[in-house]
Image (cartoon, rainbow, N blue to C red; front, side, top):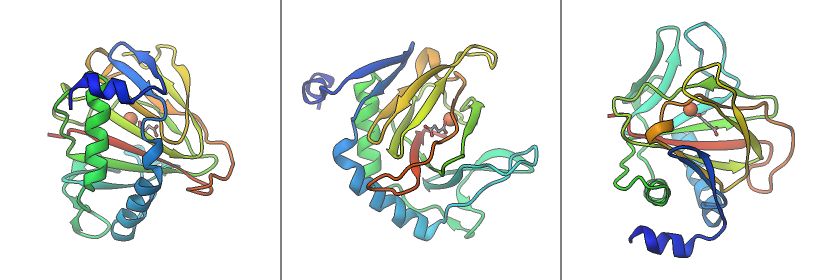
Length: 215
Ligand code: SIN
Ligand code: FE2
């Protein structure tokens, strides 16, 4: 399917995030129920856990992964591993529904041939947040980041190339997909403290799928 067909089918709104970055409003809205079922299946095999940062802090966001590689952190640093340290097994395979969605979103944002090898699954509970950071543990910065929101709403913070650049605030709702690459691939970003609430699908949580080409 060419980009023209995708644009014809998607009319809910493409919001600029930065140079090389967009938010595709509601892009995954028709798929959230299936995506959530897949998340529960992944978590039944590689459970959500609160990892420790290299500095010794417990992350308020609980994480798991699927795909060839999983992103992890512990006192030794941030990195990708093919084996889940909690199970000593491979991470669950990336569901074909995840891959297809990530590729469609990347195409729509102008990054054809995206082939993610990791999907980091984040789970936020009220009070959880993700401080400003760069996604820079990947070998290949030519590939974009594709980030899918499910469940409770959040505020995405998107800054610049330097940590001190002012971050702009963008609402992220269930079914929204953010894609950034090119000039903004290494821009600082994060998620503001999650407010309380109950989502009809996910209950007291927000989930986020982050697709990356690790290598
Ligand atoms: C991330 O930057 O890894 C996650 C962003 C999000 O949860 O929306
Ligand atoms: Fe990130």
